[in-house]
Every structure is written in C-alpha cells, then in structure tokens.
Image 1: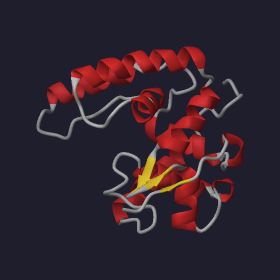
Image 2: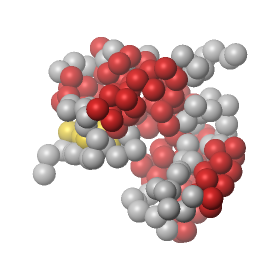
Image 3: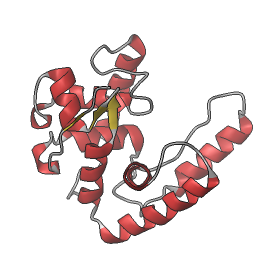
Length: 179
C-alpha cells in the first residue's frame, strides 16, 4: 500500500489553495465558529424533501479537520457527537489559519495521498507553493471523494467542478481581509 504525505506550513502553499477549498467546501469558513447553521438547515430540508437523491452534507472545514485529526471514518451518532466536541475545541484554541493548515495537511487527496504537498508532488510534479489557481481548484474538486475522483486524470465531470470552483473563488474572503 502506497502512502504519500509531506507536511508543509500554510505559508509554503499556494495562496490559491485555501481559497479553492473554501469555495468548494465551506464558503463561510472565515465567518462561522465551526458550524454553518444555514448550510445545515438547507441540507436537512433538501434531504427531507428529496430522499431519493444522494444525501447532502453540511460539514465545515473545522468539522472535517476535527474528524480527520481526532476521529475515525464512518458515520455514527457517537462519532458525530465527538466531532462536535472537537470542533468546538479547535475553534476555541486554534486560529482559522491553523485550522486551514491542519486541514490542508491531513485531507486525503488521492488513494494513499494525504495533504496538499503530497498531491502537488504526485500529480503535478511541483511543490504546494507552486500550484496554480486551476490546479488548486482541481484538487478541491476531488475532495468529496478523492479515491473516486482524480486530479491526475480528471474526468469531464471533474473539469466541470473545477470550473465552478474557479468561478466561486472570486467570492471567497481570503485570510486577513474582511469585506
């Protein structure tokens, strides 16, 4: 089994990477305190009204970081309860920059590939610092299911998601700037 992981500080990543994941995963990351209640309400309503469709999630980057770092994969009420506890804890103790750094270093970005630096090396032959906005958007597009979707060999669907994320990136508030 292959395992590729290289930790890098946030400042050694392309400035496009946090923007791309916020545009894809959690547009309100800079504004909430771990939970996006509007997104939770929307997902609950949509899942109730359309049970035949795939379940829509509403986990924030903070929640995903808590799950990736402290918990196990899978779904259970116990894990969700512990995820809530750890999310509150990291939001109290860590800055948004630290949460993003840990998230971008702990996410699975391909089969046996973890973190932005590893996927940059494995799929693009460069460091995380040198990733373009388009490459960052493509990596972000894989995050719902990085073993199913590939940034190395993107399908038409992945390229469509990449374009949507690129469009949404201009609406995301980057670190240190308030609108």
